[in-house]
Amino acid sequence: MCASVTGSGCRSERPPPDRPSQPTLTVAPDPNASRATGTGRRVVAVGQIAQPWHVGTWSPASITLSEVAAGDAIVVLGAYWGDLEARSSTAPTDLHGTLQDIINQGSSTVGRKKPPVFAQLYVELDAQPGPHTIVPPYLGGPAGDGTLYVVQVRGLTERRVITSGQRWATGTALPDVSVALDGEPVPGDLIIAIGGYDNTTPRDHAGFSHPPAGWLPLGILDDPANNVPSELCYRVADDAHAGSVTWTWTDPTVNVTAAAIAALR
Image (cartoon, rainbow, N blue to C red; front, side):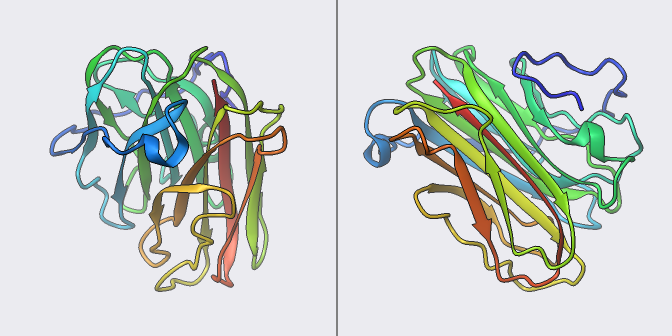
């Protein structure tokens, strides 16, 4: 797996094919964002786009954060099914910056494990001011599917990832997925997490715990019939035991789960 806090990258990965960036979903900062978590580390904008099963294209094709301010961070997350060969690139890109690989389960999953479901988490900790357009990874086709989430964070003081964690598991009738940070956060750290799954029988909805207790919702894809269901949430740590999260669902046929989590300061 090519995933590290230092973002070492993977020289063996094949570059992704040309991916369209238009049309784009344009997201502006929420002027009321500080009401949920105060004026410290906080999420000020979030957007999501999806590529449905057997469609083979993202709609829209990208997400543009329209007003990134000096000192803001960008967090890019996703949960996907990769219809790809081994060593294919599964990285998203920023047309106006460089994303750092923190967790990318795709490198060890697509073309290597079944089902090829994976989660990922990338960051840009000191983004240049101005608009940023995030292009999702190439998922292949016709069976590639998943959801890309882009989050704009404001108020980081050290502009670094403190610790991260991940989880990938297969089984029969899996009832939940839990993921925990490898290290302990401190009060005030902003923690963001994504969890997703796939199943053996299409359903109308996943029945996610939305959001998990103690967490704030950022986005959800609740369509087990046409996509990899996933949910994104965050919290500002209020004690040293805030660094884990568990999602549950009502779907009785889950056979693979994937999750990623990181703490930013």
